[in-house]
Amino acid sequence: MGCSFSGLNALYDAVNGGGDVWINENRFRILRQLGEGGFAYVFLVKEVLTESAAASGDGIAKKLKDPSRVSDDGTYAMKKVLIQNTEQLELVREEIRVSSLFSHPNLLPLLDHAIISVKPTQEGSWKHEAYLLFPVHLDGTLLDNAKAMNAKKEFFSTSDVLHIFQQLCAGLKHMHNFDPPYAHNDVKPGNVLITHRKGQPPLAILMDFGSSRPARKQIRSRSEALQLQEWASEHCSAPFRAPELWDCPSHADIDERTDIWSLGCTLFAIMYGASPFEYALGESGGSLQLAIVNAQVKWPPSGPKPPYPEALHQFVNWMLQPQATVRPRIDDIVYHTTSIRRNQYKTYFDLYPEVGFNIQMGKPKFGVPVRTEAMKGRFRDIYVGLVGAFEAANSAFMGWNSAVQFVFYGLAVLLGFVIVALIIFSCSKLINMPNISSTSHHHITEKPKQAMNTSMAIHVEPQIVVIMAGDEKPTYLATPVLRPIQHSDEQV
Image (tube, rainbow, N blue to C red; front, side, top):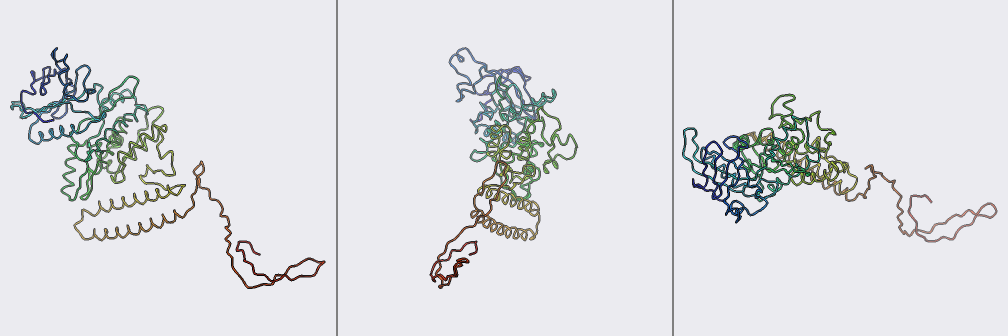
């Protein structure tokens, strides 16, 4: 959709609410204000149709390709943005462009929009106004619901927690699998719309794509790292911001896993009403940045009864890995969310501990009963160890303007060759291992080795065999013969 700058396309009759607004050729009446923030206001509006237009199905319904987006009662949410300068204008245009890219039931769709020119007034200096039309969800955001529930000391059920979270994952997966992948960059309860449905779990929709950008960025200098940190401080909410956006290395590859960190914080907030780091600071104080960079997660002593399963706590810890390179991707999160729901709130790692992941420590563990899973476990262990070592070295030495860092890189490469050799050696040993099956208690039982008799025919020189026949008869000598000797563990 293009942006319209004609003052006739969006015209309101009253400055302080209660008037009519034209968005392109469709007319809407402002009913009341729903919220505000910064230079933006959100209003509940109702489409105004003439009798002839209503009968012929004209209006916004004619413009929408998806009939499910048409409101039954003609009400919508309209976002009005006051634009003061060229930079803000470009940001609004980018939000419109990005919002128009996605089509998914768990992402809030942009139905229509208009940007108009406005003459400066005594009260303000803006030169443009933007009007964005969306479907309306009157039950508020997840943040609104969490505040209301906390006041009543109520909690979402485990089933509702997982259902809401699964819908957020589905929406993010659509963005992360886009070409090129997009990161939302501001996943938080305040950007999740909730609609309560009778006899059904709540509907969750992710909104506000003003911070969304292509996810993958290469940082190759200190100035680029500082620019990213400055941008993140303006566009990403602090309690849900990933560590790499707080303290970005001078040499780093940023990707969509910044959203995974925010998703882990949001899952915590669905359960307990706030980011884990907001909760930790409320308990002990300190620095928000330090708590996030060190992933200091504290769990509230109180909660629903019965309490949330430990699998959910482990799930949150898994997403809150300070090192982005070992953080799971959205496909992993979707898979494990489905697994938890299907297996009565047990994670895949709970069901199969021998191939599991030590989520508390953020490291894979090795305890594998069969050959193929042992190989997977060793590869995973080596991979995470390598990644952690290189990330630590990268953060420590990229800031140096010295040749010392290259010495360490040379040692790291040498260490890499040694580890590759160890991998090859380990795999060769595993391939030659007999397959070992585990008992129901996951104990590996070793069977005693049975002696294997190997027959080998060897021609030897004739020998005299003495045969003792007993007391009544004399000793006889057998006729010398040529015969093969059987090699075995028994002595002849």
